[in-house]
Amino acid sequence: MPKRIAIIQGHPDPGATRFCHALADAFAEGAASAGHDIRRIEIAALDFPILRSKAEFEDGPVPDALIPCQETIQWAEHIIVIHPLWLATMPALLKAFLEQGFRYGFALELGAPDKWPKKLLVGRSARIVITMGMPALAYRWLFGAHGLKTLRGIFRMSGIGPVRETLIGGVDGLGEKGRERWLSRARKLGAEAR
Image 1 (cartoon, one colour):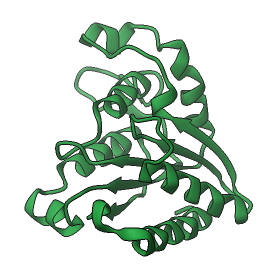
Image 2: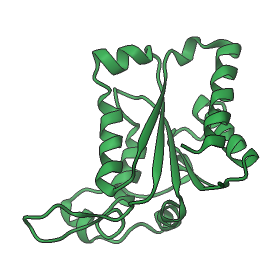
Image 3: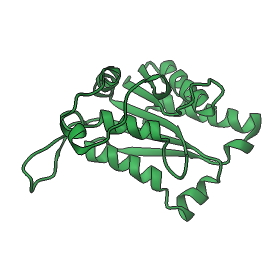
Image 4: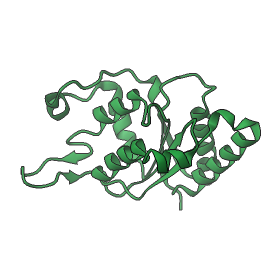
């Protein structure tokens, strides 16, 4: 059954030669071939300020550039986030995007002080795709997959689930055949939309 899919390409470098861009294209190709409806968010193309206070997060206006992004996320049934690993987590621009976009009133609704916030993005699934120079096993087992856990937590706190992951290690040494294997897998995952 066709789904509405939002692909968030989280590499902050707009250069088309980045592997994250190729992966986003492959996911989109696979999804389109299976009849899914696709919308894309390119983090590198967005211009917005970072949050600097709790008051801004709770009561400040959402930047104009991010309103269509929020609409895309609300529209989506499945969300794919693709980003490189930088200092064991997501790039700062992607984190700033999430801080600005996943605010109260969009991702969460505050209730009484002694209650957990209400999850506003229930009914969506997600896949997190992270590229990295180190082996994926080392990231997962030696470093505890800290950045992955952070993004999973943001999604789960908002009601998004299940959240699956694809970790692509050793990207600098993949070679053309290795890259094509991963792009082929991304097309398949895009078609499956899970």
